[in-house]
Image (cartoon, rainbow, N blue to C red):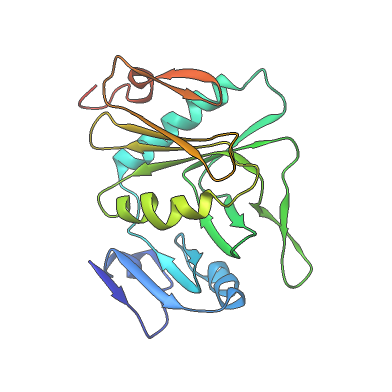
Length: 213
């Protein structure tokens, strides 16, 4: 269920849970920044709109935690790679949009967003090399559509992963050497692995302890 709201968005998490799954409100980037400091839930800014998707479920958060653990372990010996959770925002400089990925990886020092005020936002980075989204029924179309196209416009981004929380299914987009070309592969079996920045990660490890695992 999606609606366009002409009045202010709810401020509290309790109020948000009573609203439709997807809320979109026309706003300037400054209005988005102001509201982000007030509200108790995650919002994003895409194409001149504040967007709020439905709040994450327990299976979603469990899978995000698992992915964080796997990546931290995978890159533990590589000092130049740092793994971040969904509290870190991703700013797309080419479009002026600001979104949250469920998991992000930055190589080298983070390139922080300088706000219109001149202050530096240490909660917003512009240079991820890997972004991961955990798919749900309510966010699948947005994540695989608008959000993926935004991610492709981040110059240094090397890979985007989409991980389903409902069945073994991992989609990978890897930037090719040819400008504008991304290589798309997917895995559907727990016996398969998916390459993550050149390292093989087994689906059985990603989905460990899940009902279908």
